[in-house]
Amino acid sequence: MIHQMVSFGHMIKFSHTVFALPFALSAVILASKQNYRIISWDIAWILLAMVGARSAAMGFNRIVDSKFDAKNPRTSMRAIPSGEITQTQSIIFVIIFSTLFLFSAAKLALICFYCAFPVLLLLFLYSYSKRFTSLCHIYLGGAISLAPIGAWIATTKSFDWPILVLSLALMTHISGFDILYACQDFEFDRNEGLYSIPAKYGIKTALFISALLHVICFLSFVSIYFLFDMNVIYILAVIIIGTALFIEHLIVKPDNLSRIPIAFFHINSTISLIFLTGIVGDVLLCQT
Image 1 (spheres, rainbow, N blue to C red):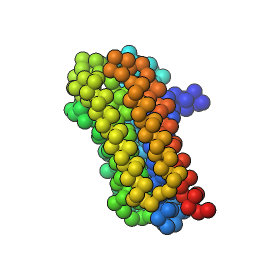
Image 2: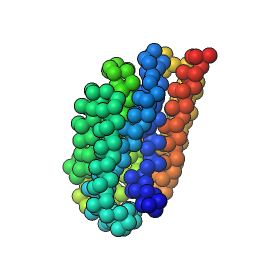
Image 3: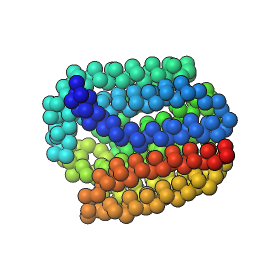
Image 4: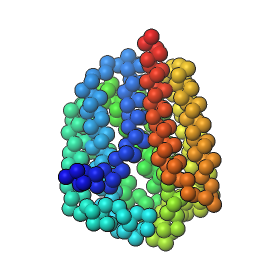
């Protein structure tokens, strides 16, 4: 059983939840800063909804892409192509975590439950986007960027436009580093007729587009400082994030993609956690 749990964790890259989860939690904390009442059970259901949505989406992606994963030397040892997990087991996994997402949304508010169905559909459709558009990275970022909006609505039971800036930060953050990650497979994607920005425009242009998206990401972080009346701890976090983004693009070169795994996981997960730390530190400073 433990072996199966580890296998499913590897299949969906559960550790990568750290990319989006801090942004959802930051939305909750920003809501508290705006004097909305935070209910502890809401936080618990938001966490479960995040885990459910992401696990279901990644499981669905692994099922849909299993044919291509089996052909790609970089991904051929993933759980489904290697036979470690069967297609049937994966389908059951997706059903379970989709149910968890929908149930958690229902426990938050009726509006969250209604919105959960189109959100889940958008997450599932991403798995097919690489078959018809090189903007699949933007689609992925846009789908994941719904997390802070959902967390805000779940907390406040309302919608306020400034939260869109946090979603823009997450969208450009995810889209930018997904383009970097896709550079590893640009030859495979071209050979298989799959769409991606590296496959369509080449590595050099892809790195430029990724950097441009991360500039927008950084500017979005800066905008949050003004929109939510943040303080010095937050702006220090933003400076660190800007430095990390610069380093990320400094270490990845068109003729040397070997450091993409470092940029993809270590730097980007650090950025998410630093952002959350800056938000938490800022709110704690206001309370003292």
